[in-house]
Length: 314
Image (tube, rainbow, N blue to C red; front, side):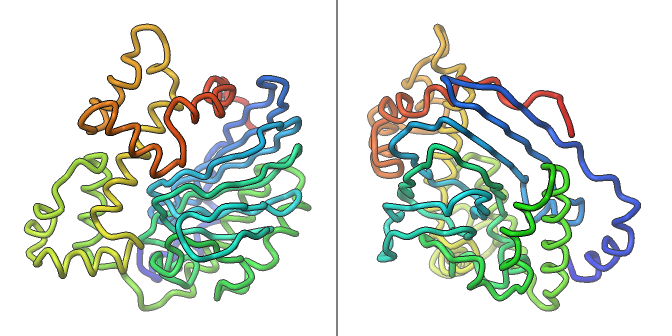
C-alpha cells in the first residue's frame, strides 16, 4: 500500500469502526488465561495479520519453544522481559527483551517462561516489515532486535503505553495509532511485485511449490529470483517453503482434530501437509522445533486443547 493510501486512511480513521475484539477468559490445566485478538486497522491489513494479547498465570512449563513461522514476530511484554535462552541458529547470544522484533528463522527460539506472563504479539507480513519498522526482513532474519534499536521513534514508548492502557481494546487502538504513524513515514519503498506474487503463491500452496517454477513464472533466472527473494523475505526460497509447510503442520496440530480418534494421526498429518512420510515430518520437527512431534505435543498439550477465543468482546 502506498503512502498516499495511508494518508487517505489517516484522514478517515475516525469514521472507521475498529474490528471486534475476540476474547477468552478461563483456565486450562490450572493455568488462568486471559486471551484477546483483533484484526488491525484496515490500512494495515496487508502488513499485519493480527494482534494477539495474552495474560497467563500459573504457568509451570520449564521451556517454551518459539517455532518457525511465515510471519515476522513483534512482541511487547506487559510483565517482566521475555527471557530467551536459545536463539534460532544465529551467533546472537541469549538475552531479555521488554519489546522486540524477530525475523523468519529455521530453528526454535527457546524461551524461559515466567509463572505470570502478559503481553501482545503481532504477526507481520515480511513484505511489510520495511514499511512498518524501517528495516528489512533480511535485517531481522534469525535474530532478535530490541524495539529501541528500530529506526521508528514511536516504538520505544510502546511497552509503557500498552501497560498503562485499561483494556485489550484500548491497547489494540494504540497499536493502530503507532503503526499507522510509522507506515506513513515510508515514502519510497515498495516491494517488487514479482516477489510479492511468489510469496503469496508459496503460502497459498503451503510451501509445496517448486522454486524453479516460481522463478520461471516471474521470468527470472533461479539465481536472480533466489537472491531477490532472500533480500525481501529474509530466507532463501527453499528455506522459506520449508518454514511455510512446517507452519501449516503445526497449525493443524494446534487444531486438535488430528490427535482425536479417526483423525489420521501423524502419518495422516505428514501426507496432508506435503511431507514424504511420518519420518520426514519427524526429521523436520527435530530441525525446526528441536524435538520430535510427540515431545512437542506433550509439552503443549493443555494449550492445544483449550477452547480458544469466545464471542465475548470488550
